[in-house]
Image 1: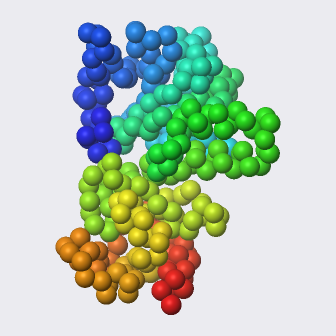
Image 2: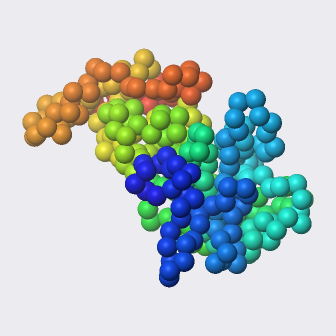
Image 3: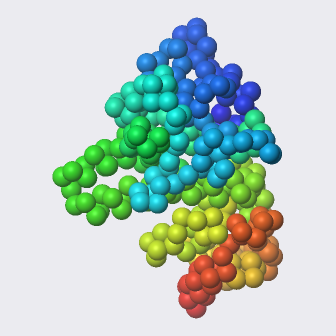
Length: 293
């Protein structure tokens, strides 16, 4: 699945994989919550992207993904019938703290996989569940580790536990959405390899920067490291600036490519509503200028 660079065709998901001579499917076409016949609990969740003019039944069909404002958790709408068999399979996954795959529709028959996620809150009366997601940037944070941290909220300082959990949850959502609106390409280099891309904050999380698309830029892990180290800066007019410490070095073609970005413009989405916010860029660029003086 990773070989598709973040945009997975339905045919690949439907194909599944072989395990002990049996075919195991990853998701179902008819239902958003899927349990393979080889398992007793749900394995995946799926949203759909309705065709133009078609009626939508769930909130996540309109926005693609929903976030619960109070907790920062991902919200997933359930079918209206609490006796539906998918309820039981998802409830079992919830009770076991089992890792799930969240297939989010990004286009017709095309999906992005957010994984692992797990059910943090199961509210049948509200008709939705709340999902926690592991941070795709911090590889040391696993679904099990984050789940343990959430469970320790009962015995540790509440504000610390809540803040840590929310940061992990919204980072996974934020990075996923930023990469999607940038078409899974680095805004600096146009690199299209999804496994090497992250959605990076312009105004940092620690400084109160929101997990909103205008506060994000899709970039490769290399450019992300340079951006966070203030070796790169982006001014409010989207002009890229390269630190003198990089410009003045001489050490091969990769460095030359980075130096060549100086004075070029950041490649951003066509829709103004998801482009980088000018105020966030001003905040970040001021710190870049401070770092190079």
